[in-house]
Image 1: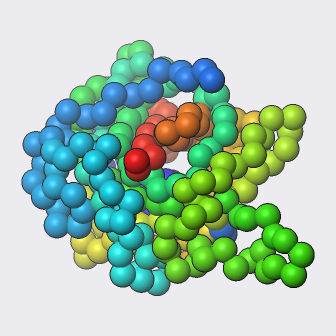
Image 2: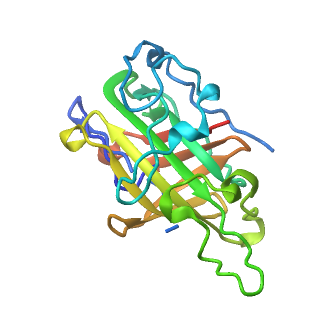
Length: 244
């Protein structure tokens, strides 16, 4: 997600910057998955390009300890694409805990804005874990999330709806790579994500603390983030699919 990962591309003198998640049914139209992904070579860091997201196994999304998480890049690269239209309206919703992969990065540049695929790309995997309800004498903090493993809680629990003004929070474990990553190395992060209404706050705690605010739409199998791009470029949108 947004947070620490930032992609910068120069196009007509404009810069595009990204962001991530944080310590841990109606569905508006969503940007299409970029067809160019099918032509990308194997990154060597996840499944081969051209593999369908639905066949990615949860086990392939967990790897060696990267410092802040043990997630592995198990999805394809998402090509940054400009679309000359307004962004969809965020609808909020209940987030399903589990492992997600980035499938689309779109920048809505407005009806008279730029359009077309850009040179930049992102690749990202993260896990959202719902904190279990502790029984008497049980340590609620011992949810197994810190080691980056996919827990039973993540597979079976659902975050409570944030309707009626009730905030919800999930633990977040992440790995992200982009075409402009320093030294070609992936970044590992962890923290929490909190939702309230249509607002989603990403609050990374590792490797450093910060807060990034977006709006979002969640379905039972996807999360779409919306955020302002710098330099007046437009509204950025990232679509994440739940790994089945």
